[in-house]
Image 1 (cartoon, rainbow, N blue to C red):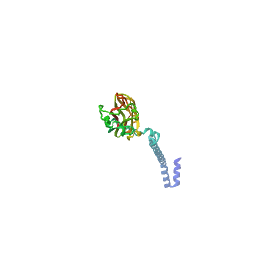
Image 2 (cartoon, one colour):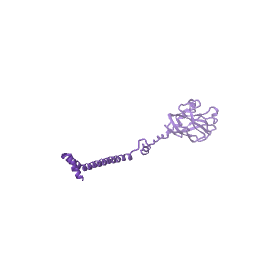
Image 3 (cartoon, rainbow, N blue to C red):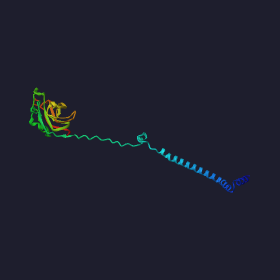
Image 4 (cartoon, rainbow, N blue to C red):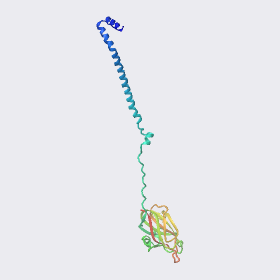
Amino acid sequence: MAGQHDHALADALGPSTAKRSRRWWARWPALLILAWVALAVVDVAAFGVSGSSSRAAAPKTASRAPARGSAAHRATTPGPARTSASPPAAPAVQVLVPVSASAFGPTGPASGDNPGNASLAIDSSTATAWQTDWYRSASFGNLEAGTGLLIDMGQPVTMTTVELTLGSTPGADLQLLVGNVPDQSQMRQVAAASDTGGTVQLTLSSPTPARYLLIWFTLLPPDGAGTYQASVYDVTIEGTP
């Protein structure tokens, strides 16, 4: 039936038109196949591009580094190592050598007792000594308030301890004063001893740089002859220059 229809159509269209019609119908299945293949290729290509994009994007999301300044970045980024600076070592305490010694009285060096022997107190020998004048009472016979020995260090030094070698008989009251001028009114007391004798070591209450040290007697010990007199055989000063 279909063949008769094709022949009738060919007769109606004429010989050349009929031939072209038969060729078109003959190619129709092939064209359908080509169209289906093309659509399949497009779908596969689109799927491949989509899959590649997904695979390429996934690692970026998973491996993203924490932003600088974020909490995660601060927690994982090591900071610079902290170092603690050691404080400078304190200067070593040592024996300080005086430059000179002079007798010192209530009005200064001019009123001191036995000024010619003052240097014997700092000659590093306990066989020699500077002595005060002798008085009829421990309080200088009520003639004066005290007497003493002024030590000059030559420049300001920090004195920490002073060791005095006195006469063996106790009974002396004394004070240690320091300052940068040889003026008792401008010096300050840093140590004191009462009813002392022999070797006495005094620690200064507030060591500060000072040039002068005044050993000031306010009471004298008895000298065994019914009078009162103090002797200083040696003075050893320790501190830092």
